[in-house]
Length: 344
Image 1 (tube, rainbow, N blue to C red):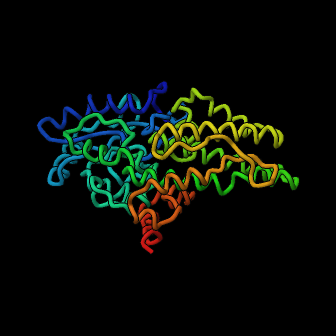
Image 2: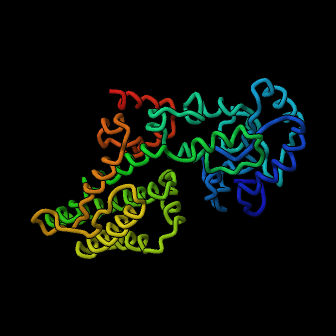
Image 3: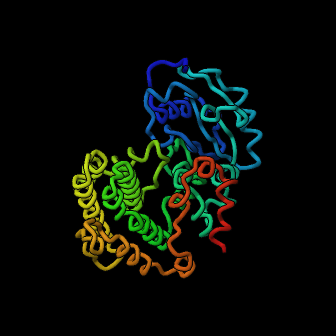
């Protein structure tokens, strides 16, 4: 348990830690500093519950390579053991890395965090295999000082290149098309549990599609619903998805899902990436199943993609669209091996 007092958001805690402790030690030295990397606190989603482990000051301080040793010695020799009642830990060799201060260069950190050599110029393959949560670790955290070295990277990684984004939209629509008819079919054979599972999968895919449309990186599973809710949904999409999950029978489930489909389809048309597409649900062939026909949206997006290299990949999707394993998505060494999938 933490030894500090009442809950204070990590962004606020670390702002004070930087301004009161770190900034005075770096007078005259160009640097950037921020709360970056992994964790609920980086995303601004931390609550009092977050304090039960690894809670306290946490900063990355970025300097030039030739300044790392000098700055490390300066800070280490002047660092208090506590700040506002929380233990201050130093260095990158601490077993629980959510609770420490690290001095490094931007490029060295990006190599460790993303697995890329240059965060300012990602290749297509870099983009394809880098999980969105990892990109959030760079772009979403609070920055307390910056001489420009960090901002240029955050700007470069703020969102996908337009053609790649359009292709990813096509891939996400394709995921929906692959399963939208299964909600009815599973229920028809008496598999209500299976029907609920498919509805839940489709709900998740619709949430991720909506985040894509809004140009917002999706966080890891714990915070997906929070990120989705913070988009705001004046059209009631969030209520439709809640009703789809709460539905006790197929008619209710299908009615809620088709209402959600139509609203997401209208949002697609608002983007004006393709010619307008009829957003109305429709029967699945001659079966008593109502679907959107999401393949129409997938194909329209794919047609709008200009990069032939992306077109040639088909609709496999970027890493978050086909991988769902934490040991892969959190480990640059593991997920960068997937580049070979795209290069074949």
